[in-house]
Figure 1: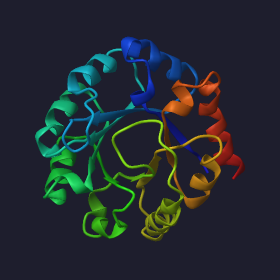
Figure 2: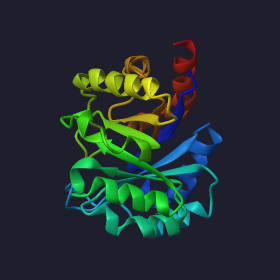
Figure 3: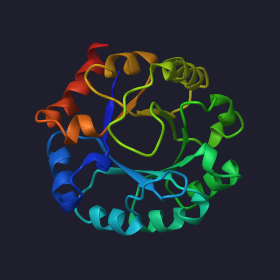
Figure 4: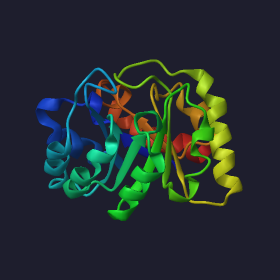
Length: 220
């Protein structure tokens, strides 16, 4: 099983994001994950399309923008112009999920949906043809460094089974509390893209974790 690793800049040093992106690129990252927060859907505010556009000038990594924002449909055009490759919206943060996914796809980038820990996968039932990625949140959104919620493992497995049964190419991403201890169970449940923040950026041997996670996927 080929596992992609998408380090989350939420836990990086914001004073030198360009250097932080270079570090993960040099250490084997597949994607760079942008946790975009608006201070409304979640309490904190992080960064927006201007920062994404600045980073795009300095990396060729696949750029994955997770919009933890209300009314995401108002933001997607700015992030597309910034050069992101995939935009993920929260199912809970929009009244018109089909509409915003069609808008993202119409702008020529990939589209994903994120589900909070308590959100059932049934909300995806009628938008599967539009999905390039499903993101299962394994913590409640809004802050880095939280502990993994093990009760989401059955949901990861159920979504992985759905993807396989449909023979589609949807990636299954997991974000929240991903580290050396939790990754094996997450991968076993069916995840294909792992987002890790504090375990990579705030640990003395965090950069080594990027390739370790891929090894877990191969050996598992």
